[in-house]
Length: 305
Image 1 (tube, rainbow, N blue to C red):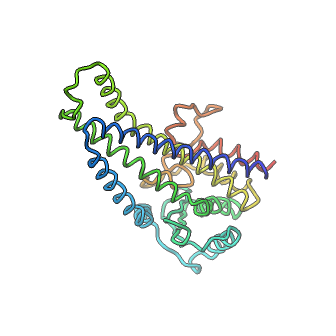
Image 2 (cartoon, rainbow, N blue to C red):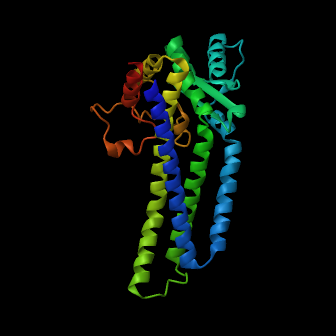
Image 3 (tube, rainbow, N blue to C red):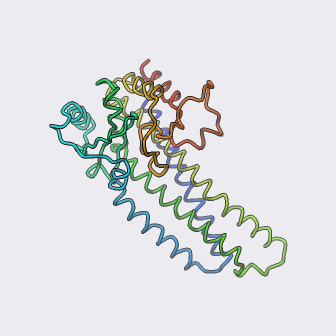
C-alpha cells in the first residue's frame, strides 16, 4: 500500500504543477494584452468579470449538474442498501453524509458534485444499481466519495476559472487585432511585428493549451480517486471488476453533456473505452477527460498484489 500513497502524492504534485502552468499562460497573455494596447484596465475588468461569472456558476454547479442528469433525491427508505454503503464509507473516510440521488439512465455510471464536503451530493444511475454487486458498488461509491474527500471540486473550479479567463482574453485580443488599433499597430520595425505575430499565435493556442491542461488535471484526479477508493475499501479488485462491467456495457448515456463529462465515474461518451490496441495512442489520450479504462483496471490490479 506504500506504493499507493506514493502515487497519490505524485499525482497531487503534478496537478499543482499543471495549475501553475495554466496561470503562467494567463499571466503571459495578460501581459501581452497590456503591452499591445497599453490598457491594463481592460485586463482587470476581464479578469473580474470572468471570476464573478465562474464563482457564481460554482455556487450553483451542483444544482445545474443534477438537473442535467435528471437526478432525483432519495431517502434511506427508498434504497436501504445504497444508503448503508454510503453511510459506512463516509464514516470510514471521516466525511459528512452527502445527499443521495438516482438518475433514470440505464448506462452504469455515477458522479459526485458540490462545492465542498458539507454541501456534497452523490448520484448513481439505475444502470449502475442494476449490474453491480455489493463489492463493485462499494468501489464505485468509494471513488466518488474520494473526489469529495480530496477536494477535487475546489481544484476543478480553480482550473475552470483560469481556463475561462484565458479564453476570454484570447477572444478579446483576436477581435481587437482584426479591428486594428493598439499602440504597437503602426510600429514597422521587424522586432515589434514579430512580437505581434507571436502574440496572435499565442492568443489562438492559449485556450487550446489551457483546455488540454484541464483535461490532464481531470485524468489525474480520476487516477487519484481510484487510488483513494482502494485505500478506503481495502479491496481494489471490487473497483476493477466494476470498471470491467462498464467496459462491456452496451447502453449509452441518454443525454451526455461535454460540460459535465469530467464529473462522471466513466466518460459518458465512452471516450475512455479500450481502443483495441495494447496502449491508447498519446494523441488520443490528451483529448480524454478520463484515463483509458484498461489503464485504470491495470493500476488497480497492481494495487491488489
